Image (cartoon, rainbow, N blue to C red; front, side):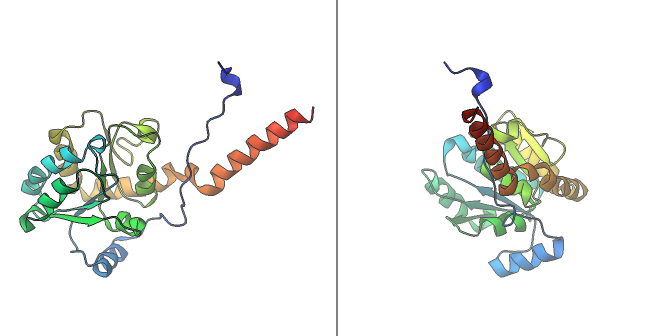
Length: 217
């Protein structure tokens, strides 16, 4: 019942001082510090839940490994699907590592070659923005901020069908194309600069100032 001209949408902010890109040499050094092999790496960060597309990712992963045997998948988070993740990670030949809940998510995004977040439903999708800000090519479901930003073909792939076949195809394509990964990585930070805390807080200040101006009339 509220008129649309009285509604203002201000989206979430992300700490861009914490999520930022690094070069390839620094990535190798970071992996060493974190105890991770220096090889092609995809990372999933989020709640271990069905709506995040995690089961489809786990089903897709063996096919990805056939195309790219040296690839590794890092799974970060907790939730109801933890047993399924642990089952996959229990087999060394799977290339899956379950890292649980972590406080160094920014480092994990920076050390990855791809962030794969095939979610079906996000109100915003902070992890999408954090990955792009870290200079990490993104594979995301078309939801939240990934449905509104020009990510697809510019800084990653946005997928409509959250299926193992589609996820496998996109991961394999990016793992096989270092030039495209570099191009996507370069484009990501500029694409999400608008979500920095300074910019978002400025939007709030301008809103408050406009309300105060109306009240004083």
